[in-house]
Image 1 (cartoon, rainbow, N blue to C red):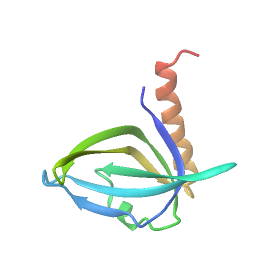
Image 2: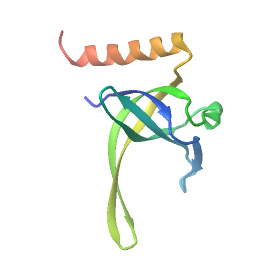
Image 3: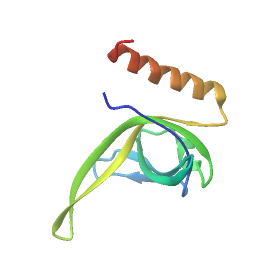
Length: 116
């Protein structure tokens, strides 16, 4: 099972991109605060994001639910890799009911696979 839940702040404004395949995605760079440790920066990609996603800005707090993926690509004659979170759901943290519903869906998905 590959489920990621992040409560984080945007490190930079959301960036919309169109891929050669004509698919659209929104790239997010988020910072996750860790109590008693250094914060961590996490790249997030969100395919099929709604129009409001590109209005997300620095310091907006969001909840991200998705999965970890490592992708490989060629650049400058060598193979590179990037580990990122592919978002299924992104919710502004200020929308408490939507956050609670998204977390419940993630909990249910985990409970369906992991016995109690």
